[in-house]
Amino acid sequence: MKLVLEEMKLSYNEAQVSKVLQFYEATQQRMGVVLVGPSGCGKTTIWKVLKRCFEKMSIPLKTYLMNPKSMPRQQLLGQMNNDTR
Image (cartoon, rainbow, N blue to C red; front, side, top):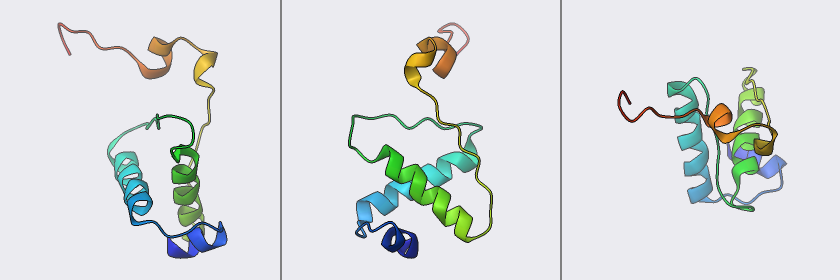
C-alpha cells in the first residue's frame, strides 16, 4: 500500500491506511459495499488505493460507480422491515 500511495503522490497516513483495510475487510464479508460520507472525507481515495493495490497483485476488483441521485434511496440501499429485520 505504501508503494501505491507514493505512486498516487499521497502521503502515508496511518488513519487512512486503516480505513482502506477496513474497506477491504468489508468487501470480503459483504456482497456489496457502499462508501458514504461528506465531501472531501476520502471516499474516492479509499477505493482507488485499494483497487490499485489489487491491480499490483494482478487480482481483478470490480467497481461500479453510481450517482446516488439516479434512483430512489430504498432501491439503492434497500430497506429494513422492522417486523422481520
